[in-house]
Length: 187
Image (cartoon, rainbow, N blue to C red; front, top):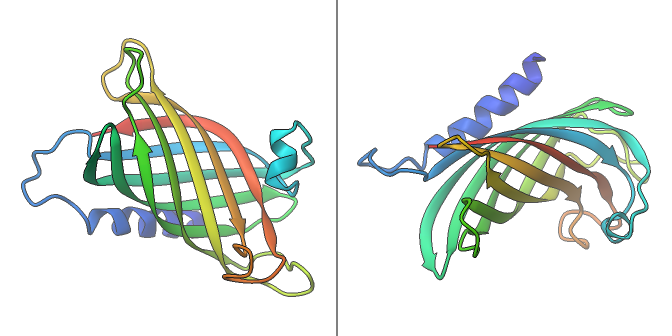
């Protein structure tokens, strides 16, 4: 693992650990996801319609913690993550976001759908529109379902996107999107 990715992963984990419960007895408040997949510079609406221009790959680690039960299967959660981009451009990001998860699906296998949003910092990102934009917004979505015959392991589909958030961080900047898969461990 490259040292810069290790630093990013450690920062993401430390961000989550700062929010640890005092009693240490809560179960399934935490999860760690390892994931990866192809990256694209195609805008999200085109990806949904099946058009995808692959420009490289990305691997990431996300540490999530439930903060509060909102009722009816919804929870408030925080996420810290580190990523490593490969191939077309090679750089790392760290992100810290707030999100909502839902886990009250009608089938028996434990399933979670979560969406997170927050700031994301890139170390030496490629220039966009002639300028580097290290600080951008990120959006991350995860669909997780328990792997059969396991207690705490889930298969995940994950999306990670960095952009200027319609001018909030930068105008007309779309760093790209990763759509991939991985594993999540709940504890």
